Image (cartoon, rainbow, N blue to C red):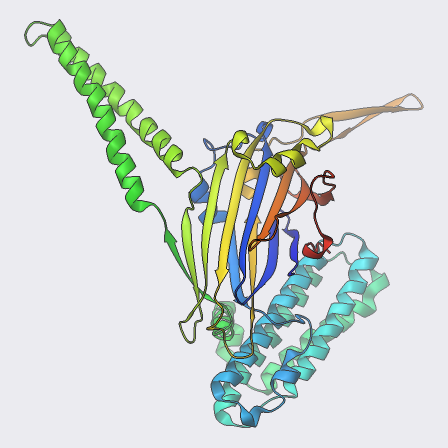
Amino acid sequence: MSKIRIKQEESLSIKFSHQMEKGDNRQLDLYFFLPKEMGIGSRTLDEEEYYFSSIVGRRSYYSEGLHLPLVQGRFASLNRRTIEEFRLYLNLFAYQFAVAVENDVKELKQITDVTHFYFALDELREQVVQLLKKFRRNEPEDPKWKSYFENADNYLSWFCEQQLLKVLAHATRTSDFNDIQERVLTLCRNECAYRDEHKYNSVQTKQDPNRISNKMLLLRRLIQQGVVLKEELKPLGIGLKKFTTGLATALVMLVVSALIIQAQGAFSGFTIALVLTLAVIYGFREIFKDDVRNAMWRYVQRGRPRWSRILRDTTSQAIIAKQLVWLEFMRQQDLPDKVSDILKHRHSQNKVDAEILHYKIATKVNHSEFQAGYSTIQEQVNFSLVPFARYLERGKAKIYKEVEGKISHESVERRYQVNLILVLREGREAPQYIRYKITMNRSAIIEITQSELPDSVNAPESIIDDE
C-alpha cells in the first residue's frame, strides 16, 4: 500500500503527499480541529477563498527513486525509442531532479543545529554533483533530440546553483565549516562556467535578472510537459445554488408581502405612517435577505462536494483520473464515530472546544491511458496556515524569576495546538487513521508530532511515512 507523508513545508505550511496506481479508488479526509480561542470559523474564514488562496496541489507521473539517476535506465537504448518517449523520460528525470533538490533545500532550512546543517549541505552538494554528471553522460548526438536535452541541462544547472546559493545566503556563517562553504561555492562557480562554455544563455539575458528568471521559468514549464498532469477544475452545485437563491428570495418576499398587506389594513389611506412602515419593512428585507440565503445554502451544501477535477495527460489529452473535492466547516455531531473516539482520547487539559475544518478528496484513477512505462501518479498538496495565523494573538505575557535577590523576566509567546486527524479509505478496505498535533504561534509552526490512537482504532504503520 502506498505511503502517505505529512510534513512541515514552510514556516507556516504543511504538505501531504501520496502515490496512486492504475485503478486505485482512494478517499482521503483531513479534519483540522481549530481551538475556538483562535477565532477561526465560518464567519471569519471563507472556505472557497481559503481553497483558492492557500491550498495548492500538484499531480504528476511518478517513478520510484526520486533521488536516483532514473535517466541511466531510461536512456539505455535511445535508438529504439521515439523522440516523444525520449522527451517524456528526459522531462520526468529533470522534473523529479528539480523537485528533489527543492525538497532537500526546504528541509535544510529547517535544521537549527549548525553542525548538522553543514554536514547535510555537503551531502546535498555531493548528490547534486553526481546526478549532474550521470545526467550529462547521456547527452544525445542527434540535433533534434539535443535541443530538448540542452533545455533541461540549462535549467537544472541554473536551478541547482540558485538553490545552493539561497541556502548559503541564509546560513549561519562560521569559520569551522569554511571548507564546506568553499566546496558549495566552487560547485556554483563551476555550473556558471559550464553554462557559459555551452553558450546556453546570451550576455544580455545573463546580465538582466528579470530576463534570466523568466527564461528559466519557461524552461521549467517545458520540462513539466508530459509529466505534470493538466487539471480541469469545475465548481459543483451552480444550478442548485441559483435555485436556493431564488427560493430564499421568494420566502423573504412572501413574508414582506404579508407584512405590507397587514400594514395597508392597519392604516387608512396613504399616510406618512404607512410610508414609514413600508420603509422599515423593506429595510429589514435588505438586512435579512442575504442571511436567509446564506443559511439555506449552507444547509443545502452540507456534505456535498464543492469541486470536481479532471486530470489529463498533457501530451495525449487522455483522462488519467477524476477527483471530487470537499471543503467545509462541519458540526461536531456530523463527525464519524471513529474520529470522535480519537478526539476523546486527548489529554484532559487539551479538551477544548474547536471549530472543525474538513477537507476531503476522492480520487478514481483510470486503468489505462497512462504513458508507456508508467503506472503511478503522485499528488502533493500544500496547506498554508497563514490565514489561521492572522487571527492569533501575539505573546504579551512575561515569566519572572529570582536568582540571588535579583529579579529578571522573559517574554513568552502564545502557542496554539491544532489537532489533525487523517482518514484513508482504499476501495472497500477498512478506513485507516492517524492523528497529529500541530503546535504553532503567530509566526511559525513549532512542531508536528504524531499522537497515539485508542485501542479501538488501528493505524497500520505501512501507510504512514513522516520522516
